Image (spheres, rainbow, N blue to C red):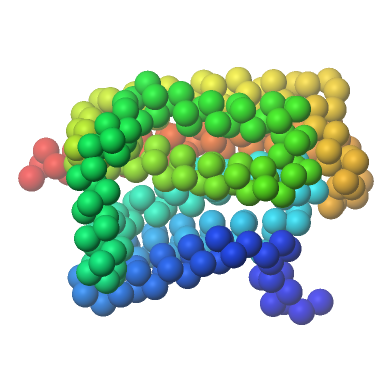
Length: 266
């Protein structure tokens, strides 16, 4: 089979493709003007690349036909991809890569009072943690999950909501300075990352220890990997949510602690 076949979309999505291309072009233009560190560029391209690979290639087929691969997809969309993009501190580069009209539009939106109130509310630690964990739990409700997996519009809404929420959450907890005029202390940011661990463990454990099939949609549509039972598929998916999701918080906490130690030295 042609190697390039694996990089062709399972289901073409113009919004995913166009957004990826536009963001990539803006970042390249911004890099040409501001010359960021190699590490920043590496984090950005890894984050954008992983996000695209799980969203717009043949990987998407397997995510729709195997529960544990679906969980890997959301691990990237909600955790790893946004995490790496935020670590690259891309806002300055993206803004520098925009034409003047784009920069003016961003300033107008940032100065619009309703937008300021909304973003400030979303930056509240309780709200941010609730949304982060709530989205995971909502899309994993068996009835909701079943509907989302058979309706392409809901499926894409699910994936976009996870990615955007991941960008927002990791942007709040990993960024030292103020986010939308809201400044959180290192302790608050660490507390937020600690707070999202227990819900993920509980949801993952509930899926892992379930004695019956929670997500029959994968059986109905046919599993991509033969020989793997529905319960085993669920158990692997539960472990991914249980362990790897919480692991991202641990890494984030270490990054915040390291950043504060370096700041105090200087």
